[in-house]
Image 1 (tube, helix red, strand yellow):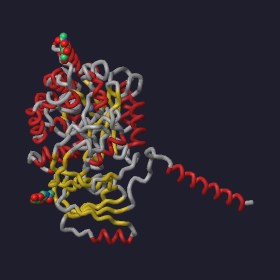
Image 2 (tube, rainbow, N blue to C red; image 1 turned 90 degrees about the horizontal axis):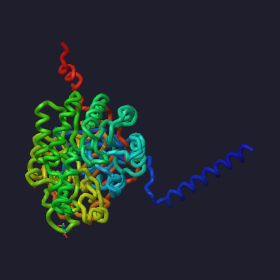
Image 3 (cartoon, rainbow, N blue to C red; image 1 turned 60 degrees about the vertical axis):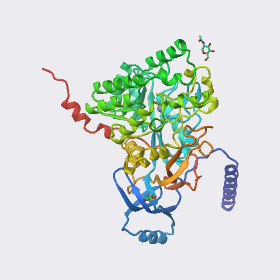
Image 4 (spheres, rainbow, N blue to C red; image 1 turned 120 degrees about the vertical axis):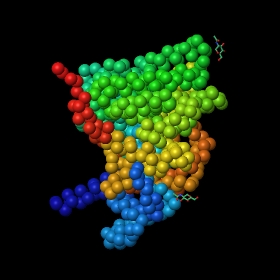
Amino acid sequence: MQGRTTFLLITTLIISLFLCVVLAQHQDEPQLVTIRYAPITIVIHGGTIVTHDLEFKGTVVIKDGKIVNVLHDDQSYDHILKQEEKEDRQVRLIDASNRYVMPGGIDPHVHLALKFMGTISKDDFYHGTRAALAGGTTMIMDFAIPAKGETYLDIVNEYKRRGEKLACADYSFHVGITGFNENTAQQMKELVENHGINSFKFFMAYKGVFQVNDEELYNGFKTAMSIGAISQVHAENGDLVVKGQTRLFNEFNITGPEGHPQSRPSNVEAEAVRRASEIAYSVGNAPLYIVHVMSKEAMEEVAHAKAKGYRIVGEPIAAGLSLDDSVYYKGSWMDRARFVMSPPIRGIEDQKALIAGLKNRILDLTGTDHCTFDSEQKKMGLGDFRKIPNGVNGLEDRMSVLFDKLVASGELSPSDFVRVTSTEAAQIFNIYPQKGAIQVGSDADIIILNPNATRIISAKTHHQNIDYNVYEGRQVTGVVEVTISNGKVVWENGQLNVEAGSGRFIPNKPFGKMFRGLQREQETKAPIKV
Ligand SMILES: *[C@@H]1O[C@H](CO)[C@@H](O)[C@H](O)[C@H]1NC(C)=O
Ligand SMILES: *[C@@H]1O[C@H](CO)[C@@H](O)[C@H](O)[C@H]1NC(C)=O
Ligand SMILES: [Zn+2]
């Protein structure tokens, strides 16, 4: 009797296993994988290790997804090889001679599969994170923004499901707050305490869709501050944008893409930066993060606020640091429509000012605002620039474009580059030194960058899910030759080796570095009662 049961049990097991294998082979959709790192030890030697504050020749040892050793040049790694051999582990040696070994990029500003302007952005969590890894970015931060009728928790859960199924690199979220009522504070608190959120974005533009008014900003900033979360703003005066658009379209009969930058000039952006910073200060110096600072005038408001002791950081993006507004005035309608994003790309003087600002820490870190719409989607705005879906690519090329523009040009040092592409984001969003560092115990998110190699950017070779690239034809110095994500080599020899679902959600803890000393500051500046 017992023998028969065992026999049946074993047979059932064998059949189920067989079925599992067959079914797995027939599934071409991306699958959830549970092994997140290869059972192999990686030793990167011969390179120059660059962190946000140091540059030295050395060796990095990676095991089980983590950095387990960092050796300086005079230290031999032979003992590590012997130890691994004793434990019967495979070792892979990577020679990084004449290369930089840097923390993988963190892009704090992307929109993957965003529902926006009547369509959905093309790069989803799979295509976006894949492209990111090919360009040396190993973590992204997206914005979970609820549609009408959806709760904040609903959208965060939906984004987590998408990430779990599709993301090839690690990710976390900011949450877009699109209004403020009696329930909002409670929901924000819940997200911070139990769901790994530590930043909320408020839109001062996109009237009738996402836009919030000053009172909502005040209440939102105050709530965020009280729970240790950063307030972020899209700084453009949305009312002035609508007036400007109507004026250009109706009074001047400007319907093409050139109407876009002219309807929302720099003063419209700068006014919003100033207003947001004064509101943040008024609630008790709430930490404030200005996303996509595009103009010199807006940057000067950030500088002004910093000089007054406000807790404010500014994020320029790759497009703003490397393109200029001539793109709106030359070429075909489509050539010009591809660059439509908000705030718009500004003049060459603005570009130079943003680079100088980043160099001198008036601005703090870089993102991309990656939000891709293909040519077909851009056509939604034929005959009316107001309907062109807003967004440009950047996630894949940010590291190269910025290395070229900032380091190869001599404006920033390699360490500064690491700071503005990775470490600062990790510190601000409170995930340092798990991310943004080359230290024992940090996640093994590492790139090997050849500062002497060049490449030409093109839609023909990129991994983004659109038919063009706003950097088409640009030659850049500084090529990411190897990307390691969670201890696995995912990009080398121009080949990707990624798995959908292998990326992890990284919870962002509250009360990060922008909150240091805040309580004491508030006590010293408390109102006087006589
Ligand atoms: C790049 O090449 C130059 C010589 O052309 C060399 O001096 C420099 O060390 C190289 N960069 C790195 C990081 O090895
Ligand atoms: C507006 O411009 C279009 C060409 O872009 C032209 O065909 C049309 O006549 C103009 N309308 C007015 C009222 O000027
Ligand atoms: Zn954005």
